[in-house]
Amino acid sequence: MLYFGRMKGRLLIVYCLLCTVYCFAQLPDCDIWLLDIKDSSGQTSFHNPVNITNRKGYDNQPAFSPDGKYILYSSQKDSAGPTDIYKYDLKTGKNTLFTNTPTSEYSPTFMPDGKNISVVMVESDSTQRLWKFPLDGGKPSPVMDQVAFIGYHTWINKDSLALFVLSMPAFTLQIFNIHTQKPSLVGDSIGRCMRMKDDKLWFTTKAGRFQNVFELSFKNKQATLIGMQESEDYCFYKNSLWSISENSIVSGFMNSKDGAAEIADLSKFGISKPTRIAISPDGKKLAVVSNK
Image (cartoon, rainbow, N blue to C red; front, side, top):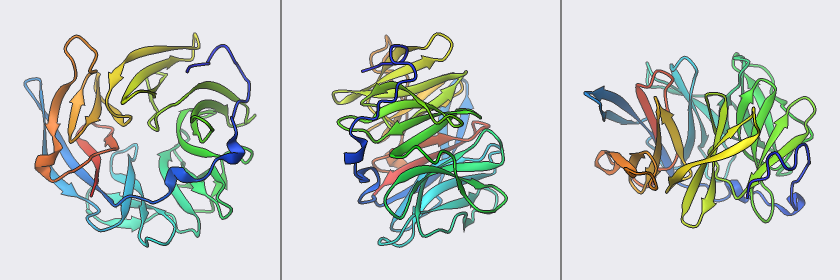
């Protein structure tokens, strides 16, 4: 259900105190793959697949740096230990530790200020808040100290965030000003993937086995239904939206006139049960998470 525009500025985090940290419980065994994207005569193809993590354990949530030179991702090296953020250098092919804390960090996201990344940190008491780490090193600090129960996030601009909040009975999408820390509720039953495109926020809501895709305009405070797809994981490539369908990447929406067209069968590369996908800023690289 969507509420934005009818409940402006109202805090509605339903039964959050009952929420557990199930969003990150029992981490799956997964790897991150990197592929080259090529366009020729209007056809998109994928080449040179490389498993950039290639180990047993949790490696997930890839995010390309704004200059496209490296990828940050969340990794759990010890199955009984916390997760940290790691850095994969596309030129050297080396993975290095980026954060090293006794807490767990997830969802590395480059901030609009160009100086920090934001992460969802699971603190020692299991509180999930948003923290920032300087790109050039230094101590982390909370982005919003009064806002907890955060599952996922994306930046709208330097002052505003879209948050996937761990509410009960359904997860909610809320917009926060980081200075006032006051929210506006957008809707519930949302998917984990939120992305900005052309100053509009894209997100999904559950529709049975499928996902409705919405585009939220901040000018008129209206959310428009764009289409339907199978997965909550998606990304933008030029003027297209790519999403996951079983072991494939598809372009377009399943309820459109032409339907969703398969552009890649990832199983032929050894990639199974794909989930999150990300595209480099120059559109030449695809990162995809493969589950074992």
